[in-house]
Length: 285
Image (tube, rainbow, N blue to C red; front, side, top):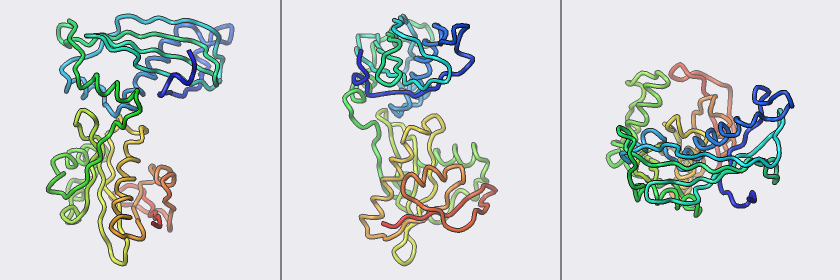
């Protein structure tokens, strides 16, 4: 099993609590590593696990898990857990995994899941939509559909996302979340392959060839999976296409690194907006 066989990897660092008296990873922890990587695999599919399985009217249950040990990981080592969906049967899914230190395979594994009725736990055929998502991901296909449009066109999808993130999660008063800019802004919404909206943002035109990006919201379960970056890139390209020369945004300080990696630079001193620390950032097009 070669590292090149995997498209997906979950990086980890071995913790002291995971090694035994021989100072190597206790054998049972490798199953935990694969299970942890599986949660990240679903993020890479842009599928929030619970909501997605509910939409598919089923759930996944482990039927079989096997490990084959080749070498040991040690305390504080950096390792990568690779996963791939290698076979889809009528009601079963076979995932192959590998724990690597660099290119060296330490532990190989196989996980067999059964798609089943969540109430009776009786097997059901794997939905064609889920089959398509898994096969598409392994083939390198995009997992997101970014749609742009007016508030009238996308409010039904963007509105609940913004309410969940800004009003419910961050405690911003609802009267501060909605403003007149929504009516004139270009909005973007990212949909996963199940058609569920998972991220949104908007682009507001300003004077002198400038534009402002704001209201960037990503479902918590999918943060860190490049979903927000896909929305941001779509808005930047829309600004460039219509001739804007600069984009500014009011970044929450916790997201400053995210925007820096996308080419934005901080301007001025930090400040508070809606009770949250912000900093103005800009990018020239």
